[in-house]
Length: 265
Image 1: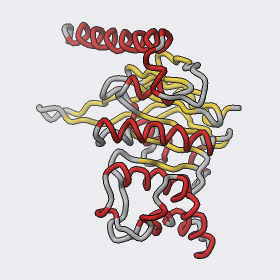
Image 2: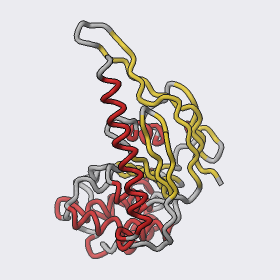
Image 3: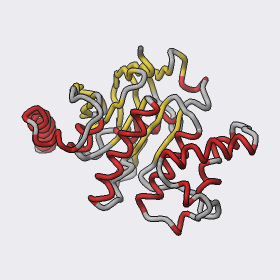
Image 4: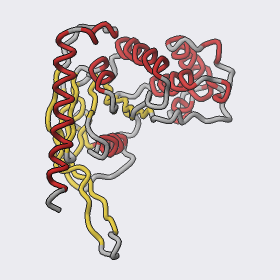
């Protein structure tokens, strides 16, 4: 079943050049994509290819300049509470304790206090941070903060979870740990996740499919068929090496195409 259907999506920005003339820069140029219900889809591509812009449009943080986004076959702007966003920065409220950070979305939904607390504690148990419920964000490590950010979105119970390089600011060991933690949480919740990363290894480890973006559109979709549950052991398999090489080739071809184009302008 299709959860998100994207038809001919466009996003443009007006730029002013050094001589004062205005021109239009197209970030998304007729993007088409179908995202299946319950799948983990990762967007991969060079910086500036439109990944975060697309995610912002899915989140309702920006307005498109053409095309359409449908969620459950309904226009995106008709639905308010079906999306949750995990940012690269933790975006926790420093004046709230861990458990009260988890309760924010539930407060917006007018959930009663007792029920809010029960739900928040359930998700703290899920991420292994129940003992830290009364701590403040400044008392947590970076990895713990990101776990709280993920749990906060899950507690809100969105149908669609958007994640914009959520582990990019973490050290390698913490990042690897949270990748496996995210897989465990996702396998338990089966929510639809759209994930942005620059890491090829991360994309292959986490995803059901990888959508490669170039020139403001999806140019290729790669199926990732490793069985679940997964571990980093897949990195040594011939199948992983083959997929990794394919994505590296796509990136290199994209860079060469841009360099060739730049030589003529």
